[in-house]
Amino acid sequence: MDFEFSKHQKMIQKEVRHFAQEELAPRYQQWDREKRYPRELVKKMGDLGFIGVSVSQENGGLGESFVTEGIVCEEISRGDCSISMSTNVANHLCGGLLEQGHKEAKDTFLKPFLAGEKIPAFCLTEPGCGTDAAALQTRAEKKGAAYVLNGEKSGITAIMDADFALVFAKTDPDAGAQGVSCFVIPMDLPGVSTQSYEDLGCNAVVRGSLFLQDVEIPQTYLIGQEGKGFRLAMQGFDQSRILLCLEALAPAFVSLEETMDYVKQRQAFGRPLATFEGVSFPIIEHVSLLEAVRLLCYKALWLRDQGRSSSKEAGMVKWMAPRFSTNAIRDCIVLHGHYGYTKDYPLEQRLRDVLAIEIADGTSQVSKLVVHREMMGKKFLPYNYRYYR
Ligand SMILES: Cc1cc2nc3c(=O)[nH]c(=O)nc-3n(C[C@H](O)[C@H](O)[C@H](O)COP(=O)(O)OP(=O)(O)OC[C@H]3O[C@@H](n4cnc5c(N)ncnc54)[C@H](O)[C@@H]3O)c2cc1C
Image (spheres, protein in one colour):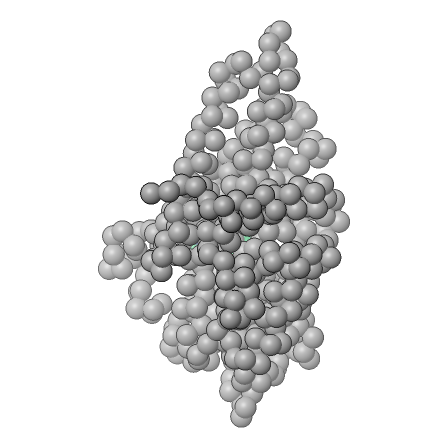
């Protein structure tokens, strides 16, 4: 057993941490206020190789391990966890899907995506279904050498800034999850439109709805095989959920580090706050819980690197990481007194941002259902598993 990152990984960690500290953290609050996705930074991240880290070299990526991808995600998120939701998590899902695409789709979308020149959006959720994703209603009908898509997607990260969308649609509406296929759709096609949302947090990367009205695409824009789209999405979630959890933990660790500095210098009753156990114990409890979950995240990524399943571990961290991180940041606000409650400090923003991770990529409840399935067996699930296979 070895808990050390390799020399190569430590070098990447240092490089990404420097980038996040210099380029992201100083503008974290500004981008939230302006609701602006810093495209120029995404290009820079592409140039530095921080996008699609685990995409194979054969497909133009770096072919790094999932553990290394986790390191990049965690470090970016120390600077800006809102940007990371797109550049690391949604991008991981989209990069993995594009790798399954036809050569034409790879040439058109994967290369500029890796270079940070084109922004993708992952479109599974619909107004009528999120957790029960296989119930989606968007239709894709084959017409000669083309597919025609109609439907609506909701809650989509970066949809307002996206250049193309990976869209899940039913090619066989009577086949449940096995009737779902995945397509890549350029955002500038006729019949494609969007609508943005006013959300509580993660405002640098705005979410919104995608509307598809008789959108025609060539059959080479089908990703993988017809009817295999749902499986591809679920396989992607097994990894993206772990990245999302590292994304949640990073701002909590930063907040606790800042809080430790603060309570060491802030005085009350003639002593530093840090000398009161009522102040230090909550910090210690949060750090202990977060450190344990962080290790489980890296174990889960390591399992993926070994070609082994990490569904159980991904489900475990997905309910714990955002919940424990939210609790930690909340206490950091309180331990800063009124200063912590102001918008001068980034703590309130981190709380808003991390709360989103309890919902995105599957809620805490559905994550527990995944663990339930892995530990107690499919027979004891509250829904018909065969429908979803
Ligand atoms: C910040 C953010 C980013 C997102 N980005 C994307 C994106 O890029 N692409 C995309 O496709 N979607 C995205 N989503 C949507 C997200 O995946 C869904 O919101 C999520 O899956 C929940 O679906 P829902 O909102 O329809 O809630 P519902 O499925 O309606 O669930 C409502 C509540 O009921 C609970 N519930 C449902 N079923 C069960 C059950 N069987 N047992 C116990 N509890 C249950 C849920 O846990 C939840 O608390 C994003 C959401 C957020 C908040």
